[in-house]
Amino acid sequence: MFSKSLIEKFQTIETPFYYYDLDILKRTIAALKAESEKHNFHIHYALKANTNQQILKIICDAGFGADCVSGNEVKAALKNNFNPSSIVFAGVGKTDKEIIESLTADIFCFNCESMEEIKVINELAASLHKKARIALRINPNVNANTHHYITTGLEENKFGINFWELEAVMEVIKNSPSIQLIGLHFHIGSQICDLEPFRLLCTRINEIQQWFSSRNITIIHLNVGGGLGVDYHEPDKNAIPDFKSYFNVFHKFLEIKKQQQVHFELGRSIVAQCGALISKVLFVKKGKKTDFIILDAGMTELIRPALYQSYHKIENLTAAFRSQQDYSKQMEHSEHQVGDPVLNIAETKYDVVGPICESSDCFAKALLLPTTVRGHLFALRTTGAYGQVMSLEYNLREKAKTVYS
Image 1 (cartoon, rainbow, N blue to C red):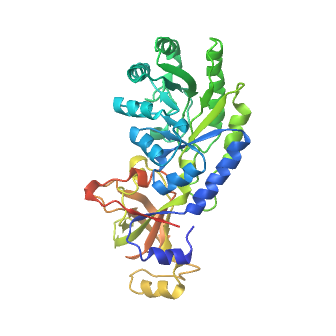
Image 2: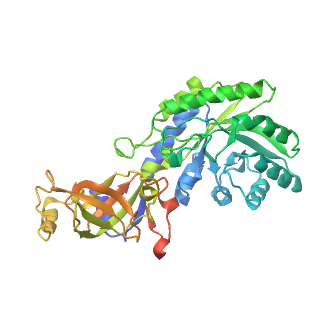
């Protein structure tokens, strides 16, 4: 991902910044289109993964729809030319304002998560003399076997309508003249690398579909969510997810009825590997058990490790790409003993931390890295998803800029 010339360019740019390799993004999109189109599957990009406008433009130009979880995401999709007829709006807490604006924009579908939400949408649609298209987000009670903070398909989670509520839900829809039920929606979690939960999801969807069929209720659209994970440990080796195997699970195990359309909401798997957070070492501080590398990027630029202990590969770009002579000269001013800087760079265990006044502002503990000094450039990999979009201004931090190639 990083050539020597690119590292030299990074040296001239104020850190921290988000770097996007648009070639990786385009290759990922091409692979996704090729595999999804084999089965006539419809793709909606989950904006919550990354709302960078240049990235949104590339994804929109590829012909994908948009999956939104807030009114402002719906506005961002519309602003970036996503077709309203391809925009779905999910989320457990849609406000009246967001619902009205989305109805006015005539979006494709609301993914509804409670009986009360259906009632409210019906009332608001009636006030606008419109009919709202909805899909029921049903909780399939399938364990995604991922981090509990990003598991969404169990009955204990806040998301979705439980199966045992369906009779009451359908009675509400029957008495809601401004509602049109067009689909079912499912989502079991995020960063799922084992495909078995998706097979179990297909089995559960088939069972739920039988419930509707037995009542002569026609469902045209099946939205099976997203959740496909990426390889955080080997981002170069596995830059593009295995879309082929992922879609084959649904093609093989999902019972698709005549004229039904199948929709997916993918985010992380599209954008994660094209992004990296580039930071510079401010200080190397002695510690009791390990030394501390203090970066100028922190949890304000990448909150995932602090939020749910996520792993991101961390690379010392300076040590990896500087010439032997330049690296050796810099090490002469360090108290560390250095081996061959190209073939056998000395390594030390470090805690890699940020500058924020929180103990949770830590990217990695006891990480073995090339011996590091002030001024070295670092890359935190696979930050194209849930990096920039979750950034904060805590401690009155300035927002990091963006660099593309």
